[in-house]
Length: 432
Ligand SMILES: NC(=O)c1ccc[n+]([C@@H]2O[C@H](COP(=O)([O-])OP(=O)(O)OC[C@H]3O[C@@H](n4cnc5c(N)ncnc54)[C@H](OP(=O)(O)O)[C@@H]3O)[C@@H](O)[C@H]2O)c1
Image (cartoon, rainbow, N blue to C red):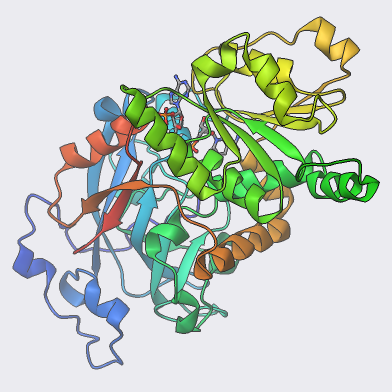
């Protein structure tokens, strides 16, 4: 969790129910100071106090049961080394919901007096695009108006503002005083770059050198029909869509597995959407699990001469077992999610006779161990976005204004694990 300071104020906290819109918009006594666009947009209380709202939870459970919306005020005199941020966009990822449920790989500590909350609490959310609205003493490398993202997971992003200590370590600055670095980017793109695209990038690069494999295979010149293959289930997920696009940019070929939609037309339309993104072939789970898939695979891989060395699994269960079957000799299966909530056996035969390797990928520790590499990966994907070579996954925007009701925000979080969505839920912050 990024350092989250308690309200340093003797003023009464301005609760949502008691704060009138006019009070929230009282001009700051610091209005004689140069006034940036960023400053103008945040809701001020008396004496320049920023009025802020956060979703919090104090026990594990379903988001609609345990989340609550908490209002607090942030002093205009920022502590040394800190910056004040206003949230522009924050996605709700499956891991955020699992964290609230208490089923994720790491359980966050409940912090006493967090933002003055009555119970020890946690602010959920790992990803966001924030705008720097004020800078405390002894901070370098930040300008007002900069767009920044959390440097590591566990930041707590479901809130309108964040006062962040140790800003230089806690944040990646996307613009660093150069507003032209926002050109070609939206807050939603910046808010969603650090988890899914970053995970897809690392999984495609760090387990099998597929680019090298492609080159070697072309150099051998034995009727090779394309770049190296990888195979993934959950191909319609944010990670899956990122892998499709990065794979295509790097000259790789992808076999993509999706779940069937309600009608054949809808299924075909989704397949086409993924092919348009760069997928080489797309199959439904049913086609993938059918016996005939073996023949289809033989055709695609030039009777196995163009092997499938990497399988990416975010589903588990039968789908994962089918990935194992499809992998070639010495192939690697990387599991990074379990959307079906079903595990799968590590079958003895393929492990021995195909000499397969089974790996697990988890971005959080990877990012903590490789912060510079993570930043580089993010910057590379953002540059691809600026150049319109990489599309973010579809999103369902949930507007979070000052007056947005707690129920709306909680339901948006709860809906994340429902399948067959038209896009990932993203809080987009308006008048806050
Ligand atoms: N290990 C890591 O570091 C890491 C990093 C990033 C993401 N992840 C994991 O990767 C997975 C995808 O995350 P995301 O943010 O990319 O997802 P997302 O964009 O929110 O989409 C969720 C995906 O899961 C699929 N899905 C849901 N229930 C399913 C089920 N019962 N069987 C099969 N597929 C199902 C959905 O398929 P439909 O399109 O058919 O609805 C959808 O494509 C999650 O498990 C997430 O926790 C892990």
